[in-house]
Image (cartoon, rainbow, N blue to C red; front, side):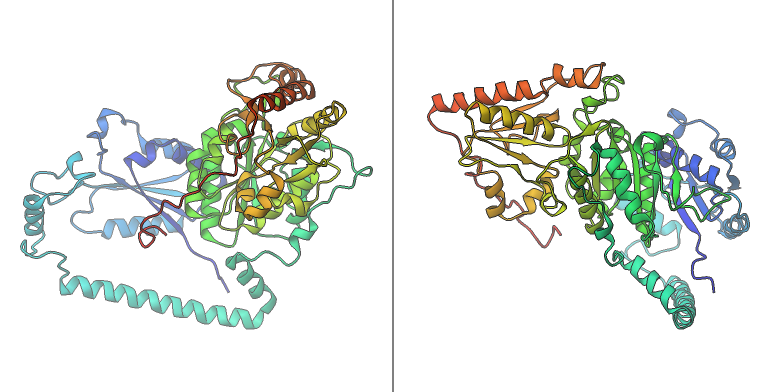
Length: 544
């Protein structure tokens, strides 16, 4: 029984093939020999600006031949689509490489004044041209939304054929369920998006004094491999940074042309294509994709990451080397604005775990939130364990890592800066300033908690200082003052760069004392929780 024998079809135009993401994806598809991928290229030589000779004169066919594709050409479909059907059949017969069918068409065909013009690209034809077009096709120009009987019959025949095909498949699947009930149940589970029972219980838990401190990218590797063996739908890879991202799966080899059973994808240096491919895998169903690169290279992939959020695809993005702490690679590789860029996007959870338990919590939430993509930002260098951290606490987005009786100050940290805050809190306590430390691995998850819980963690009326080695924007809602990045980084030893930009216990102590003193002189502390939150959706029937 062949349950899955479909082809994947893409309909694209000239503009699509100018986009970098199509080059990245097509290059990898040719390398992998994806013989069931067929691209129908509408080559009408028009874009919004005008004819393509303004900006796009390359030989697309030769480009795709160099990618390792089969290239077919259909010169005319105006008089019928017999040659196109033949080309599709030829494409389906070639199973060792993907196929692109270059179809010469005329945009606005039949329009008296707008055929073969960019005027037909993104605007209505207008009443006169619409009437002329209808006359060209033998239709009554006075009628709107007219569907002739022969057209209805053609669609009805196609619908009946499709329904018969579905009935045939349903019958086959019923026999499959009877013959292989366990495999059928597994397929049902995967395509429903349900996780394997108890899968998140396999995520590692850190034991103080037993487990060694590591970088959160190393903890991320442990998390991936703790679930991958029992979660066969988990598939993904890295954009040529596997040794740095630490995303290799011990339970599986590479997915290559000769090893299609592999679950690890070598995406190459194709960040945008990588993310788009993960969206495609999720959209197909039955897969839970993940992918990885350096945090700063999120910029290359943002278009596809945004589509993950918009489409409610629970893709897991593992982004390592998450701050200026990566050191010598310098400002070109040190992310500053990237984390806030992601946090400002709707329907995405951005995690910046501070230790093993927080990393496990990040994966737990990411796996369970099937309709929300997650970005797990991981450090390059080692981080100390937080004695009070647990997976359960971290799944609330923020929690009290170090508390004090009647605190005079609250420090909020994320990622590697939490350890700095804990060290500073000890010095502040010795100086007579009782300090609470809050670890906030995920702002979005924290804001989903009840108002009561949020206020129990961040009272809002106690001087609060946030510490994160990333852009300052976004922290004003949680803190009265911030130690953050307001410029690009610098090349140097990671610890030295951190200290130079103020991410040290010494600077946190000094700025904390200054903050407490500021509000003593001011006489009161503004309550960050004392402000209205408006629901601005005025038409909930229109907006879903």
